[in-house]
Length: 192
Image 1 (cartoon, rainbow, N blue to C red):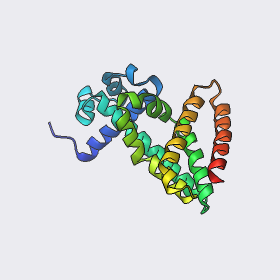
Image 2 (spheres, rainbow, N blue to C red):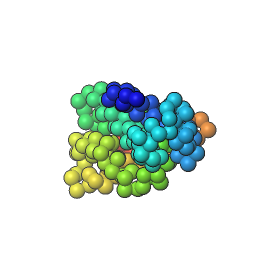
Image 3 (tube, rainbow, N blue to C red):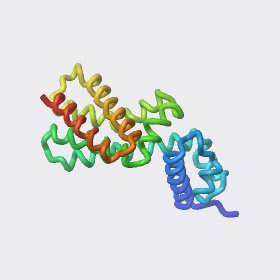
Image 4 (cartoon, rainbow, N blue to C red):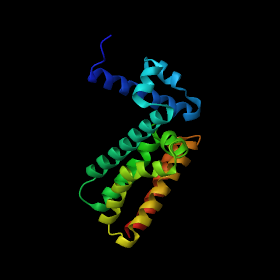
């Protein structure tokens, strides 16, 4: 039997990742089996193992892609905000809150990932994606160098908690509006 081409293998890996993302987001890591993912993706269980080694490896890939997607959304929003560093910070922070609560990211990144991939790996993923952009934006608005790391960690934590809170409310749209209003107050304090 001929081996799959590189393009076909990449397409299969992508299908698996898409299916796993949807399943992990809707049911959570503990409730999804590799058989579920294979069936949803229309591939064999062996294909899932071939591309991702095991369930934890598959989840790690899903979390890494979700982190990168959220970070890309933040960067794009900040770029569209013009040249004022304060407006870029504001736009990026609001985009983070929207991106993480309007997609499967909240359950994957904030609920399951710290437990599944471990705290250190979860922090590493954040440090490679969103955290550097937030740190740079805080630097650009004049946060003192000796406070940058602490400010980055605390503002990031506040936004993560806001996302978790928003996702747990019976009316997520209304909760998101409230979270944005509070985020504006926090950012106003940072920007003064």
